[in-house]
Image (cartoon, rainbow, N blue to C red; front, side, top):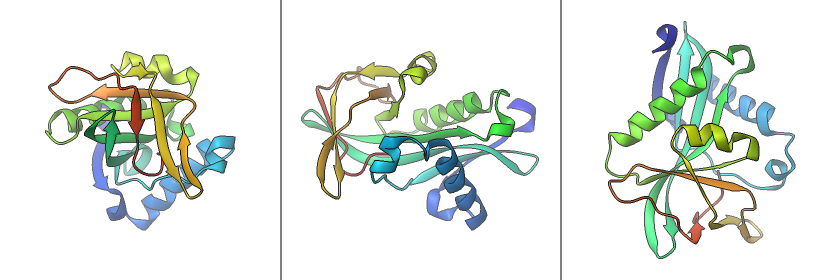
Length: 177
């Protein structure tokens, strides 16, 4: 690991109140001004991967695990909710280390079939270099006022032993992440 970087996975509710606050604040700082983020309700993470250096949190990944429908099949998905490296720690490779940990964690288990994330155009190439692939699926998700369709990039990563899917439809069966 890079420079004694410590990376650990936690159930989100088991994070210390200080780390939960730090994660929440970082998400607001990073995404709080984006219109779609402000307009929608979002899922709470089920897991958080924290990276720390010398006892200081430098970044994290939030994950939402949920059964989602891919066409007529149901797949357990590890939704990548946020990959954030705190501004003062960027450019040191910590984001890549967090993504490598995410990959190893999901490769070494049999339950989760796919990673699923939503991203801006500017991040597609970054995730493609990490073996995520873009799908042109119609993605449906819940909101308090009814079902909605996601209108931006959706990417998948195959953690199953089966051939990668390119579903026509994906139903998140809940709020987006």
